[in-house]
Image (cartoon, rainbow, N blue to C red; front, side):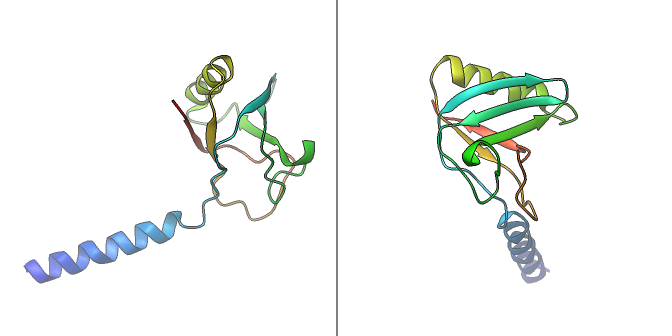
Length: 110
C-alpha cells in the first residue's frame, strides 16, 4: 500500500506540473498607465509581450469585471503603480494573441 501511495503521489505531481506548464508569465515589469473602463480595468506595462498582446505595442493587458478576484487584482495594480513597484502577470494559456490578454493573477515585487 505504501508503494501505491507513493506512485499515486508521483503521478499527481507530474499531472499538476503539466497542467500549469503552458501558462504564460510576463517577467517583472513596471506600470505605465492604468485605465478603468466600464467592462473592466486595463493596464499598460513598461515591457512589451507582443507575442500575446497586439495593442499598444504589446503592452496592454486587461482584467474583466467578471474576474473572481477583480477587486484584489485592481487594488494590487493601483498599489504597485502608486508605490512604483514592478508586477509580474500571468495570462494563462491563450490559444492566440489578442488586443488585451486577460490577467489571471499577479505578483507585486516588494
